[in-house]
Image (cartoon, rainbow, N blue to C red; front, side, top):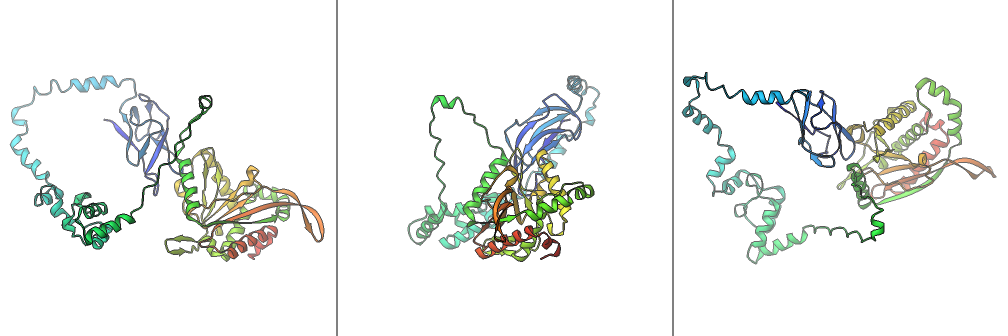
Length: 451
């Protein structure tokens, strides 16, 4: 008997994935829990293990196909791949001599089987439709009320639910059914209301402009590659953030002298005790958490006409991988030490590059930090990670001439950028937040004293 390979539950709000690659070919022997196929979701890459041992007898979907949660990917048959034909022939031949020893008295009687089958045939849907108008739309509508949107439009148009034939499940009246019926109604109050409703319906977006033609010489030197689901999601979410939020960026610079000195003094002792290097991210996370407590709007989000203030601090840390950018979340970062933060970030980076981050580890962030300095970025304007209201951009450290006590001196300086949603965060709050981060980094003792 074959065992089906199905798409597992992929996490909250994830309903489909793209088949990345198969690790086995049809006919290969497999063992239980052995990785068989790689699926790419909007956020992570998931390996689907073999549900049983046997032979990969069938591959239903190929690499690049889109599959829904619960759909069949393939099948595993019993056996080891070498003796598979023999059992099949034996099984096919077994029924041939079977009828000879069977006595007629032992055969099931058809007359007794028919009532049992009939008793199971009717379903609630069929019983309701029998008393209707032949297609189930009459009385089913009475038991299946119109959808909320349909009820609203019925009230505005003055139509009766009984006068509209529903196209939904079990004959439920949907919004489009009301609009269709209202559009076909005679002129008068109903027609006027229908025209008003149709005018309010969102117009379909125009398709994107076709790619301009290129010369044959250039065409041979191009390569067309399909975007991964992760890259598609990144593009979609970044564009949505720009279209939705009133995004603005404020800048400041920070003198990294004190932090650099702190790292020089305690680097060896810190690494010896905790097994991880003393980096910058742990200090910046602590500085941001402290500032978020003082400026709660930066840690909040907009939900319709409400503002949700979050009294917890889940800090997302942007990590670049070969597949794209992912943002694992440090949950309750206010309760973590600098060492715990550095160890968690190091673990995130390692598992992100291996594609082993879980979906739950990248959900629920309230604020994000992106360190473009590791790639040499001097200055940037980071894009919000919706629905969050703030993101801090770090950049490279370089020696720059600054004035200290009337003297021009060279100091290790870093530009900081805070992008924020101006719908929720005022300019004063954004600037104050960034200044507090700057002051905490320039004087790390403030982090210890909670100042």
